[in-house]
Length: 518
Ligand code: BES
Ligand code: ZN
Ligand code: ZN
Image (tube, rainbow, N blue to C red):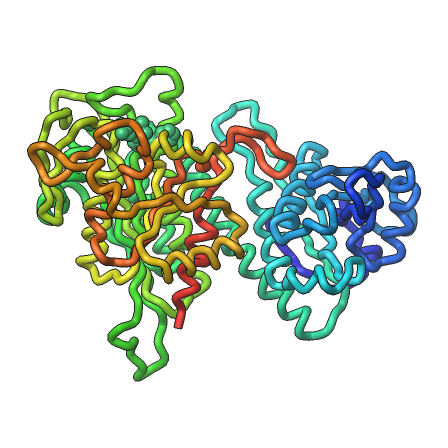
């Protein structure tokens, strides 16, 4: 989707569809909705007046009202999109509202559309202070870009309903405001595309996206955006003594892939990075299909396990945006990709394997494979000089039981690092909920015969057992662990989203990284 930003009165813009946002400004719980359009264009307000007076449109988040041939506007259609109550208006509402506008246009065969950037005069100043222009424009663009994708590429009856071009139309404003809108507009495109890049990978079936193919796609992307990328396989795993990662990989005919993407910030000539500059390590679980291995999963629902590489996809997507946004901090992206299969060569319950760090692991369940590949990925990141680590993984069903599909799980061993991530979440609009990983839980992964075991001794607190296992391999390094099992695949259709891969964590990881830029 091509995007343009123009500064003019939206009433004068010739477009097949102009979308404008509306909020409910009624005060009091039982008051009837009172709709305010978030535009200062009188012509747009006049065109919508009669329809809004009917009371049919309540202004709830994502609600739409479509008018054809609106009076006094150059647009062929006017689409009014609700953002909910004015009191609860947030940047995330704008992200969703823009998505709803795009998804309303698609089935109508509209190929070009415009969205009016929301204007503050329609709301009181106090409220708008919490909604900085840069973030609003960025969220609008992200929401539109992400909503534009449909997951029908494998259908032969595919109706290509893509929106080819989107114009964001803002009123002429002070130079500083226009600049902010422009910055947000540019960043939003980069970040929205990165999220979509991850979603495309997650959508791919296991027979197409093998570990080798994931490596190829990462390498192509890296070449496009100017990142260094190395893709290794079995031999390198042996060389690095990655016994945990290799144990998972060896049951499959498909060779594993260890993908290392490096972003080095450009320094001015003669300037070198300070010795204590942070180096960020982004480690992703890339199981391209998880059968469970010898501890095989039940048939029902197993097809979904193609998305067991969503953590890897999030890291690859984030690296793409990082290369384009160029924050002043070094970042290394590491993906541990394998297929978890049962076979005569597969690892078995009872096996003891030695991780790259030297720790021995008793395998109790071959379906707890994600933590094994990450154990070696996290340790490897440290040997490459990473001072701060973040991992993302569709790691445990237990995390889905604990948090459902609204919040993903977050674990962290260091308060300042957690604060940085919270800050990133505020900007990204993604929801993570912190769960504990203090040493009180350490006994859960004690093994009888090895240093640790790969499942908890009981089924209680399964997401925490997995986090405790990973913690063994990060040691003192500040680290964030994101368990995205419940949030990587949207099970529900919303006005702004289809069913399918969500691209969760991409936006927060990008923002977390930017928080370390010097
Ligand atoms: N990939 C799964 C986790 C998962 C479950 C992701 C549901 C998405 C939805 C992971 O490899 C796994 O199978 N974990 C086991 C661990 C158990 C054997 C300790 C689980 O959660 O059941
Ligand atoms: Zn598993
Ligand atoms: Zn898995």
